[in-house]
Length: 397
Image: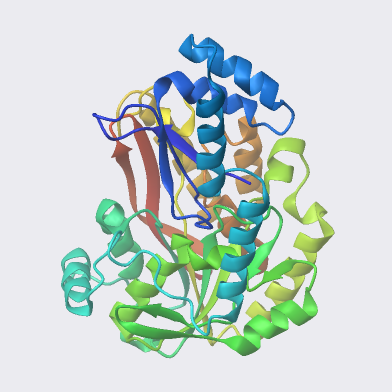
């Protein structure tokens, strides 16, 4: 069980905000400052007696029985304890997603407008007319998965590579699985619904991936229900080519074992099996498929555990830009090994959350020539920066 913890954004209610990124629970709690340290007692090892002592220390009051019961019951009712309440919430959410006929829009009304007219106007403003890149030999693009209002220039730089002649392609969307299992690939057969309408999933290709690499994939992965890295690409594709674009949505879990323990991702036999099958499909369907990578790059600053406050294009972020570009150069050269060796340096202290989709692409669709069209750093808050890019990939001459 994982929860998001961050300082309360409500000035009149200081403390620690807690929410469930998996959306098993829709509750949000703010724990007052004196009680924050007491949360360490909920580690599965400490007893209620130790919690009671922590509460006495925090409040200076020996009579904390009622406070203790209130804290436990509030956390449990919110689904923030690993107990029967949480298990019921998880089972219900995963069952509901598995049974749902469609993958509903999760971020409409927050990251982008929920009305079709407003969304169309917004994306028209982002994409504009521009100067599209030459479509010859195009095999794929890379665009951010940061909120479109923050990364629209790089979205535009990536999607400018697409042209009307690509409308009949099936778009294989490789997205970052922020909460999925490491070394696994999350699949779903469900069509994706957005304010534009329903994008159609190529069920035959999804079935083939599951049939030929069953241990490599998680079918009807619940993470699809709330993951944004694919949803954002779907709205841009629908904007360009109409609601009923054909997609293959693939969430790429992190290759954390390789990053922290060494070796290559494909040293895991299940990852290797997926690469083999995915590569076979890529070669067989080369004239029908077009790849869209939904990736962000570095995540730096206070929000991401660094000791410094990050400011886009200043200070430490200048070195980050140099290192980002070094990785991008290896991607553009279709050098999967060289790219991954840089990711492994310092156990990926740049915290790229697009490394697994990129590596999967490089290993399964090799020999392409990449081109960087736009690189950007953006302050997601006053002390934290995300970097991303718009890129295209073509057949090498």
